[in-house]
Length: 182
Image (tube, rainbow, N blue to C red; front, side, top):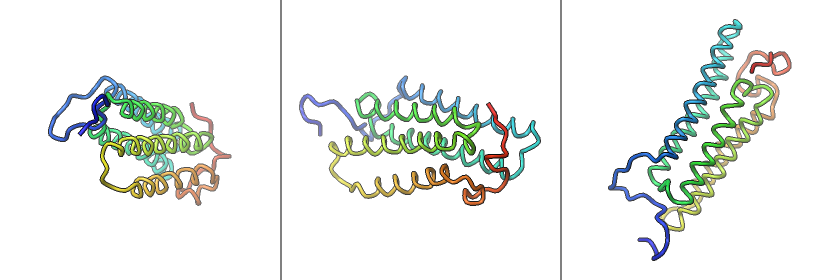
């Protein structure tokens, strides 16, 4: 099991534990992110621009945030959130989710690279936590984590760097013709 004097990094599978204050604070950050998503939808609705493409853009931003929340919840059920790797994991997820939430109103315009950069930073921090926890559990390979990292970060960065809406996969207003929303 654990070496003498080492801290507990992995939760025991048979023991149910309550959410820690840190995990609840991350949930609060996610509520803030949902507020920003709904604000983006409301702004588009009031400006008369809530077409399919604007809805699809907002849905994609929501899915990025939702995936981050889901994976954070799943991983904190395996990595003990009171351990140093667990705290690093939750804090980095909170920081990334906050940056992503702040950039949501212009997540497909001026702040697309900020949103994608926060996504990549969180994914890299998760891979680092995986390698730290892997020292405790020796089974498994690093390949799934690396493939997941590449498969989830490359499209976000590529989409943020491309300014043509058709290449991003959604049609509609281009970033040059969009209005600045707060």
